[in-house]
Length: 325
Image (cartoon, rainbow, N blue to C red; front, side, top):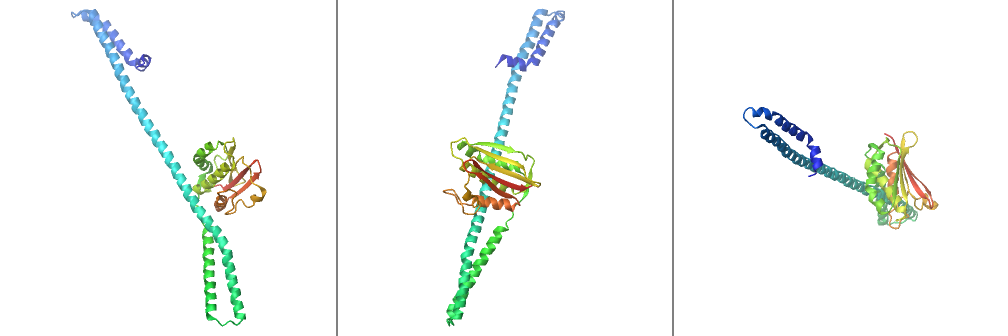
């Protein structure tokens, strides 16, 4: 045990017992009047107080340390619980984002398939009608032929109606919008990509000027859009080079907040800029061509806008606007 710490922590108790010892020495002459030798009595009384003070000091120090250890243990347990809660919230956010992304991917694929299938089905219907007219003009007397044509026409119309209903259902999906602070959504997403930034040797710069901007948005869907833009930016920059990723928020015209994600990648060529938001279009070797198409549909469902500015060899910036609450 450190003597200085002992004296500092227990100085009040020690001083009190030393004073009591001095009081014992002062009272010793009066004790001699009742037949007691004052010097041995004073020394005995004073030393007893001093010794008791030292023992008390050690006792209080031991008790204090036990209480301190208990306090540290409680603090550590509290910190561990808070850390577990943070990890759990991040894990839950990742699961929500993955679920929304799967749902939107399926929706976008369904929309793309509906668009692609509607044209050949429409063509089949036209050919069936033309074939029916030709058969009537040639005075063909084959009931089975006309019955087959009628069945083909009916099934073609049923398929066309199904695809039309599917497209209407996808188009009419509505996000679950609430009042959300846009910067808080960005901080949540940054926590998910910190590892990717470090593993790719990239630095992150934040210019979150719209610190009080509250948007009317679906928190999970808009988080997914930001996450997709950030991952696209990370993939566009060569691994191992000291590139920088910039996230910016600002107020855009009356009633809107803007989020911008800028990379220092290779940029997007002129021939691809008009197609970059189209479903199933991709410049990646293993890409599906759905990420930006889904992101654009999400933003537009929020009455916002998503667009891109790019310069070859310099980098690309994606801008997103959302209405303020």
